[in-house]
Length: 264
Ligand code: PGA
Image (cartoon, rainbow, N blue to C red; front, side):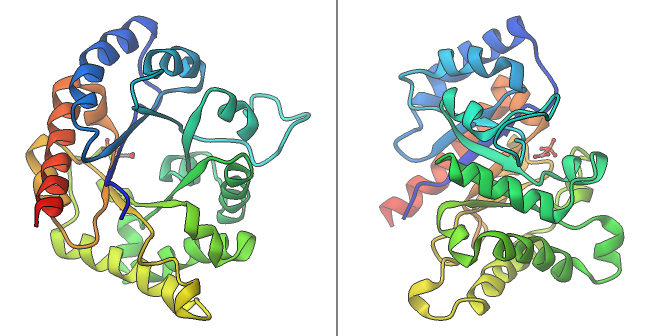
């Protein structure tokens, strides 16, 4: 069983000085938790070099927030997977709802990015989730299955053998509103069930090994409850990952959950 995973998504925040201050508070504390959990941060692209440098030899990992689906060429403003891998990125977020909704990334484009990340020997973190309207219309499962199906169409079910899925209800991102325990457990369970139903045999079923993390207004006050839910293998943290004290508390909650699982 792999360790639970915590990813901080800094989004478009920070600057050289703030990043330095944040990292210098985070690194010594987070390093102590690595026995139980894996931790990564995803800074904005221009700061990859700075953060890569700061994390060197710490065991803490680097991630990127997005990637081009193309390998190279005339794609002004884009960054390729091989470029991210030169900065020792281990993870790349693909299909974050802010990319899907604000930048109109289709599920097909997200799937092409997923493949590009794996081709560069990094791990895609596929973000899936429904909007409030979709949930109200009873379409949560359908929407998430469509988002997963696009990946299967692109790389096959085996693509989920080296991937992370992040369930992030769009209505819970940056809103302070957290999905209820039963909603989180049921979606995580339905993601595994859908992948499993696509597997031709038990040996080819990636669903039980696949880490599924939750994201959407996770903070120190609710982290322990969320991380203790069945089928939740960690968290993708936005706003709270920019505050050292909050991110450390959230990491400690996950490490405690993991520690109690280990000692059971
Ligand atoms: P939030 O963002 O924690 O600020 O809700 C989560 C995310 O967008 O990944």
